[in-house]
Length: 227
Image: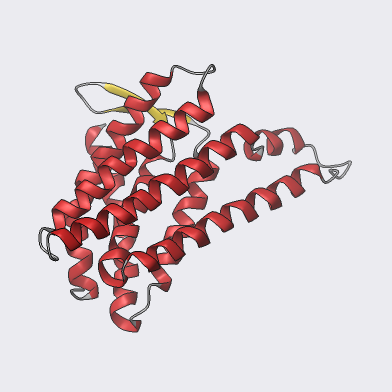
Protein backbone atom coordinates (compact mmCIF):
# COMPACT_ATOMS: atom_id res chain seq x y z
CA UNK A 1 0.00 0.00 0.00
CA UNK A 2 2.85 2.41 0.78
CA UNK A 3 4.24 1.95 -2.73
CA UNK A 4 0.81 2.67 -4.19
CA UNK A 5 0.52 5.83 -2.12
CA UNK A 6 3.98 6.97 -3.23
CA UNK A 7 3.02 6.25 -6.84
CA UNK A 8 -0.08 8.43 -6.56
CA UNK A 9 1.83 11.23 -4.84
CA UNK A 10 4.41 11.26 -7.64
CA UNK A 11 1.72 11.06 -10.34
CA UNK A 12 -0.30 13.93 -8.86
CA UNK A 13 2.82 16.05 -8.31
CA UNK A 14 3.98 15.50 -11.89
CA UNK A 15 1.18 17.78 -13.08
CA UNK A 16 3.08 20.71 -11.60
CA UNK A 17 5.77 20.26 -14.26
CA UNK A 18 3.33 21.41 -16.93
CA UNK A 19 2.84 24.64 -15.02
CA UNK A 20 6.59 25.19 -14.79
CA UNK A 21 7.05 24.45 -18.49
CA UNK A 22 4.37 27.06 -19.19
CA UNK A 23 6.29 29.55 -17.05
CA UNK A 24 9.46 28.90 -19.03
CA UNK A 25 7.68 29.32 -22.35
CA UNK A 26 5.42 32.29 -21.57
CA UNK A 27 6.93 33.80 -18.40
CA UNK A 28 3.50 33.69 -16.79
CA UNK A 29 2.09 31.80 -13.77
CA UNK A 30 -1.29 31.27 -15.50
CA UNK A 31 -0.97 27.48 -15.81
CA UNK A 32 0.25 27.11 -12.23
CA UNK A 33 -2.70 29.19 -11.03
CA UNK A 34 -5.06 27.05 -13.12
CA UNK A 35 -3.64 23.87 -11.62
CA UNK A 36 -3.82 25.36 -8.14
CA UNK A 37 -7.49 26.30 -8.48
CA UNK A 38 -8.28 22.88 -9.98
CA UNK A 39 -6.55 21.02 -7.15
CA UNK A 40 -8.37 23.12 -4.52
CA UNK A 41 -11.79 22.65 -6.10
CA UNK A 42 -11.34 18.92 -6.66
CA UNK A 43 -10.24 18.59 -3.04
CA UNK A 44 -13.47 20.24 -1.89
CA UNK A 45 -15.51 17.75 -3.89
CA UNK A 46 -13.76 14.53 -2.85
CA UNK A 47 -12.92 15.42 0.76
CA UNK A 48 -16.10 13.90 2.20
CA UNK A 49 -14.86 10.31 1.94
CA UNK A 50 -12.72 9.17 4.88
CA UNK A 51 -10.13 6.64 3.75
CA UNK A 52 -7.45 4.45 5.30
CA UNK A 53 -3.78 4.99 4.39
CA UNK A 54 -1.81 1.84 5.13
CA UNK A 55 1.84 2.93 5.35
CA UNK A 56 3.08 -0.51 6.37
CA UNK A 57 4.10 0.36 9.92
CA UNK A 58 0.68 1.84 10.76
CA UNK A 59 -2.68 2.76 9.25
CA UNK A 60 -3.80 6.37 9.29
CA UNK A 61 -7.23 7.84 8.54
CA UNK A 62 -7.85 10.99 6.56
CA UNK A 63 -10.11 12.35 3.85
CA UNK A 64 -9.57 11.23 0.27
CA UNK A 65 -8.55 14.73 -0.83
CA UNK A 66 -5.39 14.77 1.27
CA UNK A 67 -3.03 13.60 -1.50
CA UNK A 68 -4.36 16.18 -3.94
CA UNK A 69 -4.69 19.14 -1.59
CA UNK A 70 -1.20 18.66 -0.14
CA UNK A 71 0.32 19.44 -3.55
CA UNK A 72 -1.24 22.93 -3.44
CA UNK A 73 1.51 23.90 -1.00
CA UNK A 74 4.11 22.92 -3.60
CA UNK A 75 2.29 24.99 -6.22
CA UNK A 76 2.35 28.09 -4.02
CA UNK A 77 6.05 27.55 -3.33
CA UNK A 78 6.81 27.26 -7.04
CA UNK A 79 5.03 30.53 -7.79
CA UNK A 80 6.64 32.16 -4.75
CA UNK A 81 10.09 31.10 -5.92
CA UNK A 82 9.67 32.56 -9.39
CA UNK A 83 7.22 35.46 -9.01
CA UNK A 84 7.19 36.35 -5.30
CA UNK A 85 4.69 36.37 -2.44
CA UNK A 86 2.34 38.98 -3.91
CA UNK A 87 1.62 36.73 -6.88
CA UNK A 88 0.95 33.84 -4.52
CA UNK A 89 -1.54 35.89 -2.55
CA UNK A 90 -3.33 36.72 -5.80
CA UNK A 91 -3.70 33.03 -6.65
CA UNK A 92 -4.93 32.26 -3.11
CA UNK A 93 -7.59 34.96 -3.50
CA UNK A 94 -8.61 33.60 -6.90
CA UNK A 95 -8.91 30.08 -5.50
CA UNK A 96 -10.91 31.27 -2.50
CA UNK A 97 -13.40 33.26 -4.56
CA UNK A 98 -13.71 30.30 -6.92
CA UNK A 99 -14.57 28.05 -3.97
CA UNK A 100 -17.28 30.48 -2.90
CA UNK A 101 -18.67 30.60 -6.44
CA UNK A 102 -18.73 26.81 -6.74
CA UNK A 103 -20.49 26.48 -3.37
CA UNK A 104 -23.12 28.98 -4.54
CA UNK A 105 -23.65 27.16 -7.85
CA UNK A 106 -23.88 23.78 -6.12
CA UNK A 107 -26.43 25.18 -3.67
CA UNK A 108 -28.43 26.55 -6.62
CA UNK A 109 -28.45 23.11 -8.27
CA UNK A 110 -29.54 21.49 -5.00
CA UNK A 111 -32.55 23.76 -4.44
CA UNK A 112 -33.82 23.58 -8.01
CA UNK A 113 -36.77 21.16 -8.31
CA UNK A 114 -35.90 17.85 -9.93
CA UNK A 115 -37.72 16.64 -13.03
CA UNK A 116 -40.46 14.13 -12.12
CA UNK A 117 -38.82 11.39 -14.20
CA UNK A 118 -35.33 11.84 -12.66
CA UNK A 119 -34.75 9.62 -9.63
CA UNK A 120 -31.15 10.61 -8.74
CA UNK A 121 -31.94 13.63 -6.57
CA UNK A 122 -31.20 11.88 -3.27
CA UNK A 123 -27.80 10.62 -4.42
CA UNK A 124 -26.99 13.99 -6.01
CA UNK A 125 -27.78 15.83 -2.78
CA UNK A 126 -25.79 13.36 -0.70
CA UNK A 127 -22.75 13.67 -2.95
CA UNK A 128 -22.68 17.44 -3.40
CA UNK A 129 -24.53 18.67 -0.33
CA UNK A 130 -22.20 21.03 1.52
CA UNK A 131 -22.89 21.68 5.20
CA UNK A 132 -22.17 25.23 6.41
CA UNK A 133 -19.83 23.90 9.10
CA UNK A 134 -17.66 21.98 6.62
CA UNK A 135 -17.52 24.94 4.25
CA UNK A 136 -16.57 27.33 7.05
CA UNK A 137 -13.83 24.97 8.26
CA UNK A 138 -12.46 24.55 4.75
CA UNK A 139 -12.39 28.26 3.96
CA UNK A 140 -10.87 29.37 7.25
CA UNK A 141 -8.19 26.66 7.16
CA UNK A 142 -7.44 27.41 3.50
CA UNK A 143 -6.96 31.14 3.95
CA UNK A 144 -4.80 30.81 7.06
CA UNK A 145 -2.74 27.79 5.98
CA UNK A 146 -2.00 28.91 2.43
CA UNK A 147 -1.13 32.49 3.39
CA UNK A 148 1.11 31.23 6.19
CA UNK A 149 2.96 29.05 3.70
CA UNK A 150 3.41 32.00 1.35
CA UNK A 151 4.74 34.22 4.13
CA UNK A 152 7.14 31.62 5.58
CA UNK A 153 8.57 30.71 2.16
CA UNK A 154 9.29 34.36 1.32
CA UNK A 155 10.71 34.97 4.81
CA UNK A 156 13.10 32.01 4.63
CA UNK A 157 14.17 32.97 1.11
CA UNK A 158 15.06 36.46 2.30
CA UNK A 159 16.86 35.22 5.42
CA UNK A 160 18.94 32.65 3.50
CA UNK A 161 19.56 35.05 0.59
CA UNK A 162 18.01 32.63 -1.90
CA UNK A 163 20.00 29.59 -0.73
CA UNK A 164 18.75 26.27 0.65
CA UNK A 165 15.66 25.79 -1.50
CA UNK A 166 14.84 22.53 0.29
CA UNK A 167 14.78 24.37 3.63
CA UNK A 168 12.29 27.06 2.65
CA UNK A 169 10.16 24.50 0.82
CA UNK A 170 10.00 22.16 3.83
CA UNK A 171 9.91 24.74 6.62
CA UNK A 172 7.12 26.68 4.97
CA UNK A 173 4.94 23.76 3.83
CA UNK A 174 5.16 21.38 6.80
CA UNK A 175 4.17 23.88 9.55
CA UNK A 176 1.46 25.34 7.29
CA UNK A 177 0.05 21.87 6.70
CA UNK A 178 -0.11 21.36 10.47
CA UNK A 179 -1.98 24.64 10.96
CA UNK A 180 -4.35 23.96 8.05
CA UNK A 181 -5.13 20.45 9.28
CA UNK A 182 -5.70 21.42 12.90
CA UNK A 183 -8.02 24.30 12.05
CA UNK A 184 -10.07 22.29 9.56
CA UNK A 185 -10.53 19.19 11.71
CA UNK A 186 -11.39 21.11 14.88
CA UNK A 187 -13.96 23.39 13.22
CA UNK A 188 -15.45 20.67 11.02
CA UNK A 189 -15.57 17.69 13.38
CA UNK A 190 -15.42 18.85 17.01
CA UNK A 191 -18.05 16.83 18.91
CA UNK A 192 -18.68 14.60 15.90
CA UNK A 193 -15.50 12.63 15.15
CA UNK A 194 -12.33 11.61 17.04
CA UNK A 195 -10.29 14.76 16.45
CA UNK A 196 -6.86 13.53 17.48
CA UNK A 197 -6.81 10.49 15.19
CA UNK A 198 -8.02 12.56 12.24
CA UNK A 199 -5.45 15.31 12.85
CA UNK A 200 -2.58 12.84 13.22
CA UNK A 201 -3.66 10.73 10.25
CA UNK A 202 -4.13 13.70 7.93
CA UNK A 203 -0.91 15.33 9.05
CA UNK A 204 1.20 12.20 8.58
CA UNK A 205 -0.05 11.79 5.01
CA UNK A 206 0.36 15.51 4.23
CA UNK A 207 3.90 15.51 5.56
CA UNK A 208 4.68 12.43 3.49
CA UNK A 209 3.53 14.35 0.42
CA UNK A 210 5.55 17.38 1.54
CA UNK A 211 8.75 15.33 1.84
CA UNK A 212 8.23 13.60 -1.52
CA UNK A 213 7.59 17.01 -3.07
CA UNK A 214 11.02 18.43 -2.11
CA UNK A 215 12.84 16.91 -5.13
CA UNK A 216 9.97 18.14 -7.31
CA UNK A 217 10.58 21.67 -6.04
CA UNK A 218 14.09 21.50 -7.47
CA UNK A 219 12.85 19.86 -10.66
CA UNK A 220 10.20 22.53 -11.18
CA UNK A 221 12.71 25.33 -10.62
CA UNK A 222 14.99 23.74 -13.19
CA UNK A 223 12.14 23.38 -15.70
CA UNK A 224 10.97 26.98 -15.41
CA UNK A 225 14.44 28.48 -15.07
CA UNK A 226 16.04 29.72 -11.88
CA UNK A 227 14.25 32.62 -10.24
